[in-house]
Length: 330
Ligand SMILES: [Zn+2]
Image (cartoon, rainbow, N blue to C red; front, side):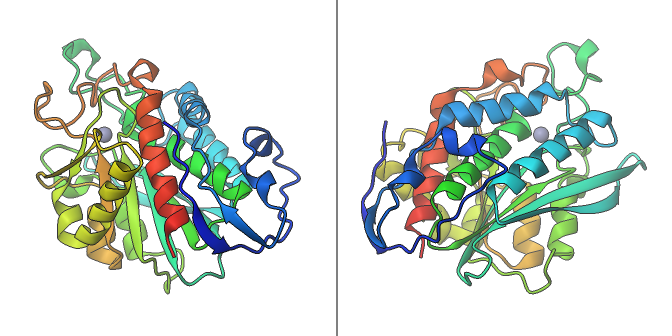
């Protein structure tokens, strides 16, 4: 499915070139269409192969468990990628106490495009992976860390690919990216033991005056046969945004994945952003009442949440929908 939606806008190009990050410019050609000050702009094609590789790269570090070398190495990789593509990128480092009593070294990874634009949207995902495959059908695997190809890396991979696209064709609005850390180190009996990175950021924003019109959180957006329903808190805090995103998905041919049906409430990073920052944020998350865990995609918090679970068609559906929302936003 190719989504090309023509929008008539005046676009001023400033000859923006990234010299040190030439890799990104080879993979697409959308930016090369910009020649005159008045042109008709197509929404660039989201490249699912590229997103897949960004997921694969994260998984290759081995599980991104807090306080491990793999976690640190992946943080550096993601910061480097965002530095290539965005106007600015940096860590927000913090320490957080886990439910176990452990002190975790967290890093939220923050990047921005078009810093001077007052109209902004926020894109987020969590980049850490769970230390325990405690939903695995094999109890001997319960202490094995999760690869987190879908739970974590998929949302990040989609966002890094969007960042690459944004570097080639600047959108009309400002876009901020926050990759939250320490989402998945929680205890099932304690809601607030999850989402430690978003809890920290939403109470300690990188800029105290930071505002965005709305935010979109991606969580588990890469598995085969994913369905995205209208999650409860998203509807409570940002029903107009969720309707906009779901309508956009249907319009460009992805209505089989984005279902117009309200479902239950999920405690995810968007909850803290909504509660503490006042920025309305929705969650695009793969929910499945029929899975063996009863809530999420079948391989959630198991050793099977690996690259075999990732489906490029789903990445494309989510990524192209996001791109369309971003480039159509004013
Ligand atoms: Zn998880």
